[in-house]
Image 1 (tube, helix red, strand yellow):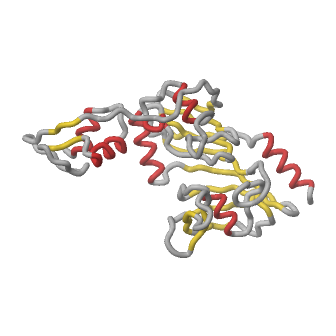
Image 2: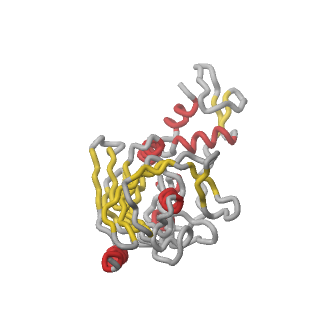
Length: 278
C-alpha cells in the first residue's frame, strides 16, 4: 500500500492534500527516513510521526449564508457580491471562511472550500462538509467534471458565439491582476454564448473548461468586451458577472445535481438599463 493511502486510512478526517503536505514536510518517516507520498510500504516497514493540527488564521463568525442546497456531505451557497471567500490582503473577517468556521467546520482544510469566486462575482459556490467529500470534489474540479455556468453583461456588441483559448499569467506590472499571453502562462479556455444583444452591450453566458483566477474577466478584456462594471479590467463598480448554474454528479451518492438561481436584483436592473439604451 502507498504511504499516503495508508495514512489516509489512519486519519480519515483529513484530506489527501493535507497528508501529502505532511509527508513532504517530513512529519512522517519510514524506517527513520523521509520518503515520498507514493512510497510502497512493506510489512516490515516502521512508520513514525504525527499529523500536525490544521492551523486556520481566520476566526469563526456568526454570518448568515444563503444556502441553496445542503446534505450531510456538502452544501452550495449563494455568495453575495462583495463577499470575499478566503481572508487575505488585509481582509480578516466577514469572509465565507469565517462563516464556515462559525458553522463548526474548523476540522476541514480551508473549512471545506474547494473553489472560489472573485469578491465581486456573485453566485453559486460548493463547500464540502466532510474530508472525503472535499477530496473527491477537488479531484472533480481538477478533471473539469463540474460544469459552472455564468451570466455576464459586457461592453460592446459581441458578434458571434466563440471559444476563447488564451493562456493567462499574472500581469508583469500590476501583480494583483492577470493578463493573456502568447507564451507561457496557464492554459485557459472559456466558452461564450450570446444571449441578448443591445445597442452598446451584450448579455453572455459563459462556461469554463478551466478554472483560472479571474478567467472570464481576463478573457473578456482580451477580446475587447470587458465585463460591465469590472473595477480591475474595466471601469466603475458593480461587476456584472454571476455564477448562476451548477451541474455535477454528487461525489458521494452518484446522483446528478442540477442547481440554478436567478440573477440578483442589481444584475436585473443593469440588464434593463442596457436594454433601454437601444
